[in-house]
View 1 (cartoon, rainbow, N blue to C red):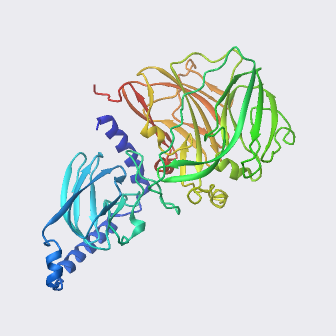
View 2: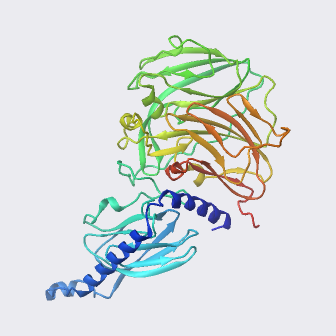
View 3: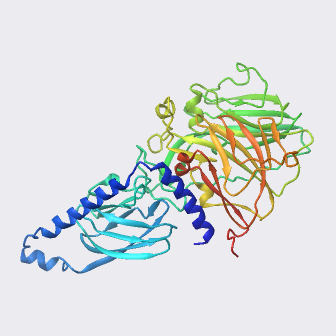
Length: 476
C-alpha cells in the first residue's frame, strides 16, 4: 500500500475518531474486565466427557482445522462474514492493511492485535453456534468493524453482528434496517467525465426516456429506482446561453407510475411543460437557455420528494455565450441521498420524509464510494474543472477536495476568479439542495486527493471519492 493511501486512510479515521468520542476509555476498560472474566470462567469449566464414538469422530482438541485470513482497514473487516465447515480450533490471521492499530476480539476474550502493515495470528475455538468478532479499539466497532464466523448448517450466535463488506478508506456500510444481500450484483460505474459541448448546435433535441429498473446503489444493496435514461443521475445536458432545448419526455407503458420533468434552467409555467404524463404517454418540453450556471432537473410528480429520492434527477450545464476557458480535465459530480427501502424495492418515502433526515447513504453520482474504488484521473499540475450539483433531496453539501484550494468558483452566479485583487481562494463550496457550482483547481504534486462533503458524518456513508494526480504516489 502506498504512503498516499495510508495518508488518506489516516485522514478518514481522524474524522471517525471525533464522531465516536463518546466511547470513553472507561468503557474500554469495562469491556476488557468483562472479557478477562469470560476467559477465566471459560478456563475454569471442565468439559463434559464425550462418548467414545464421538471422540473418535471429532478432531483432537488441540488440532487446528484451518487458517482464516481477515484483512482490517479503516474502518472495516474484509471479509466480514466467514463460514467454516465444522466447529473446532482455527487460526485467525489478521492482516492490517490500514495505517493504525486494529484487533480482532471474540466474545470468549480471544484477541489478536496488529499495527498498521503488520500480520498477526491467534488460535480460537469456534463453537457450533458461530463466533461474532469486533475490533475492540474504542469507536471502531461503532464505526462498523464487526464480523462473524458461522458454522455451515448452523445459525450464527449473533447474525446481526456481521457488517456488510466494504473496501478501503471509506469505512463499511452504515448501520441500516435493510440487510445487505451478499449476492447483489456489482454496481455499474457512472462515468464522471463531463460531456463535450456541441458548439455548432443551437437547437438540442434530446430524448429523455423514463426507465424503472433495479440498481445496486452500494455493495450489497439493490433498489428499484426510477430514472431518466436508465442512470442515476440522469444524463448530463450541456448547452450555451441562447440555445434552444427540446426535451422529448417519454414514459413507457411498462412504467408503474406517472412521471414528469422540471428543468430549473427553464422559464416555463409549472402547469404547462412540467405536468405529469402517465405510462404510455410522451410530451415535448421546450425551453431557451437564458442564464449560465449548473442547474438541476428532476421529476416533479407528487410526491416529488419520493421521485427525487428514488433517482429522478440530473444536471444541466449552461455555459456563457462565449463559452468557458479550456482546461485539462472536466468532471461532473452530483451529490444525493439514498433512503433505503427493502431490497429491490423503491426508496423509503417514510425515511425521506422525516423532519430530521437520516439517509442511509450520501453519494456522488448515485453509488456509494465508487470514485474511492475507481479514482478520477488527472495529471499533476493540470487544471481541473468540476461541475458540482447537490440534488438532495434534503441534505446540504460542503464540497471539499483535501489538499487543494479552489482558485475559481462560480456558485449560483457569484464568481471567485484566479486574478482577484486580494488573492483569495476557496476551501469548500456550500450547496443547499438544488444549488450548483463550477469549481477549478490544480494539484500540487503526485498523490491522492480525497473528494468529500465536509459534513463528515456522511463521509462514512458513501460521500467519498479520490482524485488521483499522476501515479498517486508523492514519493516516486
